[in-house]
Length: 277
Length: 303
Image 1 (cartoon, helix red, strand yellow):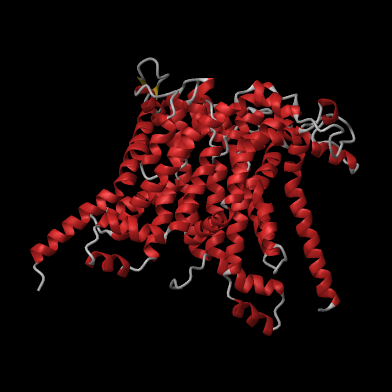
Image 2 (cartoon, chains in turn cyan, red):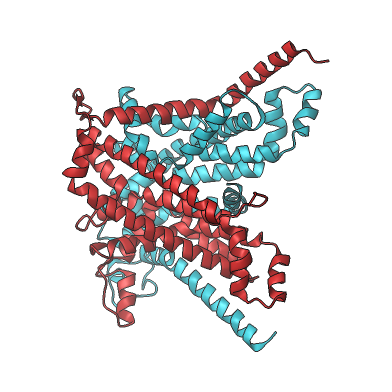
């Protein structure tokens, strides 16, 4: 290796490490501030770490807002929507990938159109519908729509995956007497399992982070999700940065755990979404 | 020999089963997309606060938006500014990081996870965090600026700095997906093609411009479309961090719509805003797809 190349490699690592540090700095600052006294937080020049690590901030955050309740509410929304998405998006995708029916082209182009449709466009009539049904201030408006395909993008993505499976598999099963539902459920779904896991993970993160839906549909504080609860917390703790950062850490921990557990599928899934389009 | 009647019956059956399987999303499109689109259009012709009966206004909401609503024009401007700046910044940053990571870097997976990690932080939590980082008096970034001898910035509190500040936050939190997708595309660029350029005496720029760029162009296009569409929907930052300020400097479009519809109960006005959003996004989509034909190179496509 020439000296110039070695210098190039070193520069490459320096830039990458600098980038990684810049990326992690906000998260480090969040954790660091969450463990400080208010006096430490406001010191100048800033302290690198707390003079006394103060875990009590977490207890204080938990006692001033019912984060466990918010956590439970979030799960009540997230679990059924993820389930709904997995079942109905894969069913719909199978329908589009394997059957010819009149209007298929039209409906598929509608699916594609719905992908780029900003949800805000259809928000007002949807809200009015839910309020006419007297279901505003319940979890239903946040869950039920996902039983209808679980999002156009997911239907599209899974359809692309079904298309890559040779039809011979279906035909062989059909000769064995398997019906369409069994072909879908026992033969094709196992093939697209990695894609399904990715779709499930995306939906989990989307729901966990969703703020707009809960903001519009949930009024009672005892129904708040973590995202909505934290936003109210921000309003009342905007000067006690240590407590606020502790609350933010509490909200971040569950998705971080899910990310590290499902990382492999996640990276694969993100990759596939970009490549399959 | 197959009987045509049987054949047709088989087709009818196949079609029915196809419809049954596809029915969740078809019903979903009708109930949650198409009907609301029509509903939204009808509501946009009325004056309606939901509690009392709607009053028919014809096109008045639209006329008002373009003639007397000062917020509408301002909101279009700041949203366009944010959309362009954010898409461009995310694009450049992600492609640069992906190109660096693609240089057979040791610990590529670890770096990739680190650059991805901010995307996992829920947007409300990162709003809280960046409020703190951007705090003009005690925030980390002003302390760094002071530390290296520069002047403090107002960040979110400055009418001219609020959008660039939100872009910094958004590049941090939003580039993860784009980086991972670019990296995968770069890894799919065939080595023999790159080596051919090398043999011909080409440098890294020739390799990038003659091989890599056309090979990854479908993914580039995907990332730009997703970037634009997502940027258009910015809302949480306005709501949680800035309340659309200062001086309406972050009065983003969806936030304006929310404010009209859900804080002021002007459903007609908000519905008109939502239809204009729809028309804008559709036009943008059309322009993008036209434009893509000029430079996006699909494997195996004619031309």
